[in-house]
Length: 69
Image (cartoon, rainbow, N blue to C red; front, top):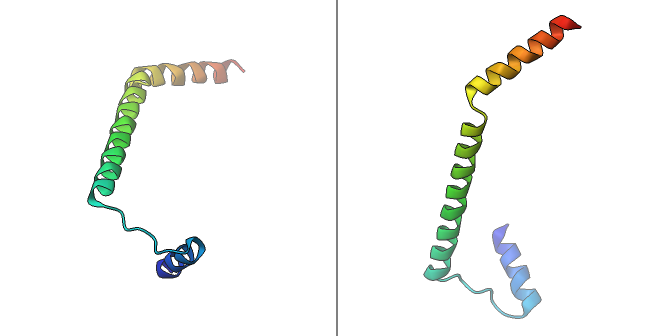
């Protein structure tokens, strides 16, 4: 399936598709690693922000509201 798509791309542009260089792959790898680190930092921030005691307090507040109604 990928081969037919490559041929279609080549036919549309009139030339063969270029093969990415090792530098292109390295840049892509670095960008993916940086995005992965950003996601890990975001998850750590959200985990520390929504700490367990706060969740327990919210749960207790919800129980109180349920018992009042």
